[in-house]
Length: 344
Image 1 (tube, helix red, strand yellow):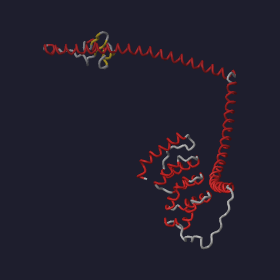
Image 2 (spheres, helix red, strand yellow):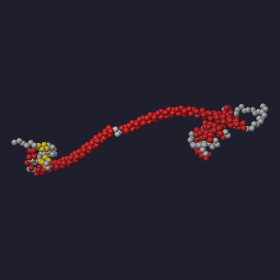
Image 3 (spheres, rainbow, N blue to C red):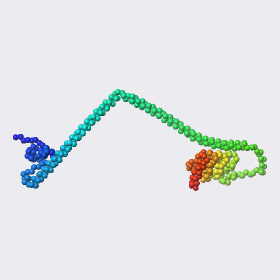
Image 4 (cartoon, rainbow, N blue to C red):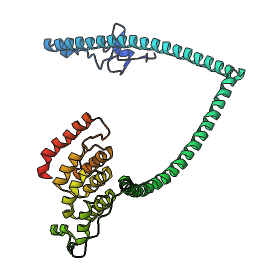
């Protein structure tokens, strides 16, 4: 008679369980789950004789049965979770399939639009716009090149202007000299002619001094001669004398130049104010501060420029402002000088 070889598997250790073990009681079925002999030992007749052995066997069987029940419960929950995930995956596949249909439909609509030529006017407009931008860029580049050329020309003009300014200044100084001389000549012509006094005899003529009086101040003879010309009645001669003394830069000429800021001729006063910028001395600043109140604008303007050059200060002063505004600005200069004079 042929033996039944049908196999089952233990739910705990996954070992094969022969049908003979189930028939012999070495394996059991609990709630449809097979527990093999490996995990459910059966007490032998010798063990049955001992109460402690029977109790331990029963306790082990209960523990294994509990583990089997827990395993079956977890498998049931896991099966439910897997079924839920499968349903969600099916929904996602359906959604993806739907999205694919939408994209396919969109591609067809785009292809249809392109084939219909509806976008042709837009393409033409874009091409026209691109051409317009290219032309604008070329025009702008041309204007930039033209501007660069004009700027290069302006640099050359600026150089010529700077060179011309020096020449104009020299010409202005010459014109000032001529104006002073002309004014003196006109004054002489306007005066009534007078009879010339008789020439004194040789015995009556004073003996000229061989050394000018200004030589006592330690000035060279040539400069001493110009010092004497500062008192000449001719404004042109006084102008030339101031110019020579200023150009000498001799510190001993300063005491003779300072009074010339009060000369009756405005051109002489202006030249003096300009020349004093080359003499760094406290008395120079004192005199120029007073010259800020000169009645002539050209003198005030020059005095302010010399003050800035000497002191390095930039205190504002408008030579063409009202008398009140000029007085206020002059007071600011004097207030500063009162604090800075001792350290100058």
